[in-house]
Image 1 (cartoon, rainbow, N blue to C red):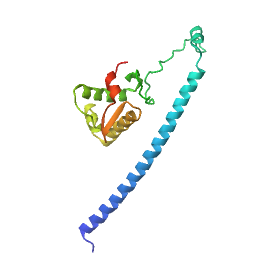
Image 2: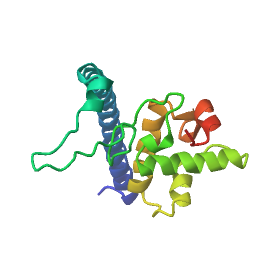
Image 3: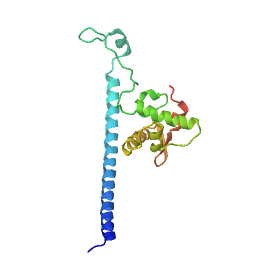
Image 4: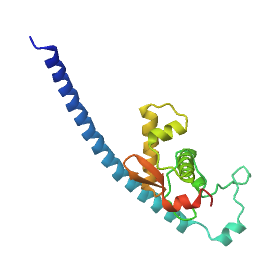
Length: 177
């Protein structure tokens, strides 16, 4: 009859193998996601360029009064207005934080406050606590995903794995533009 310790070691080994398999699969999926996200961003850029080319001239816009079929004027939204679940734009000089959705703005504000106080970078767990969220893996991973997206778009810098701070030029603008 096998010993209890032997059975535990056997189950531990099985669990370790499963964890390793899942990590490999997660890495593969993450790599695919990065490729798909880059492709998506290229299409977003292409669409914005097509919109610029097809946009009417300023003179034509001034003379037109767009209206719905029911006769009501059409309200146009500002181009930089944040929309829920919107794509995070690449950071560029003069781009206001308001171009980001509220969740992303909260991350930038928390990191700006840390910079202002002379404190170092934040981890996602620390951000979770700053925002008063439940310290559960799902919330922390959602913050990590947003922070990584901000890094990829030039808003943040990840100086060490999992430690985020504002990018140099973003920190200098202080959220105002």
